[in-house]
Image (cartoon, rainbow, N blue to C red; front, side):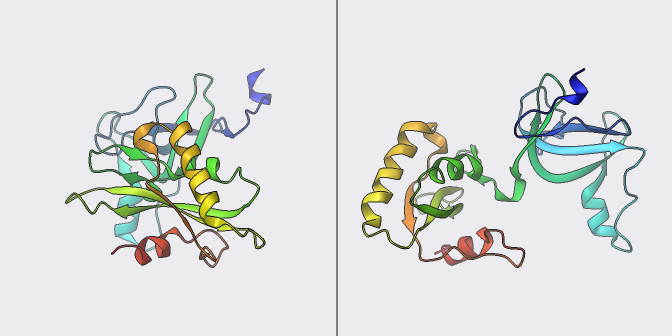
Length: 200
């Protein structure tokens, strides 16, 4: 049956003791198939909380009004398809919210930019919107492989491609070459540092 199948990009179907759901972060409402929201899980094998860390526990384990169950909020963005397969597309903290409230997912931009053979690494981060009092817009920092001479032309080419292939409100406003993308201790892109360095 379908249980033996795994779809590309999916983390699979939750086990029998766990129920996964996707919820709108703002309203707390459970979303339908293929709608993107925060992935939450509930079930008998759920953790009881962080040891002696009440505030963090309350932030992660929340009782939902609608069903009275305690759900673990994972901080992951994802969706569930019609067959019950769960897909994770990124972290909520990484989401970039524009001035008009539209949410941009860095992973959509990064996967497009990373397809270029000259790109060694890239990170899309939210930079404060200078023209408005609120909101951020996406800027992509690109680390090219060493022997690339004309980074400016390549950045223009990638920018054009993003404009052609991404929906209007999900496009980066700039592609910026960078010598080296900072990494966290665990070797992941340190987008927080990039954001801080580009706040002004």
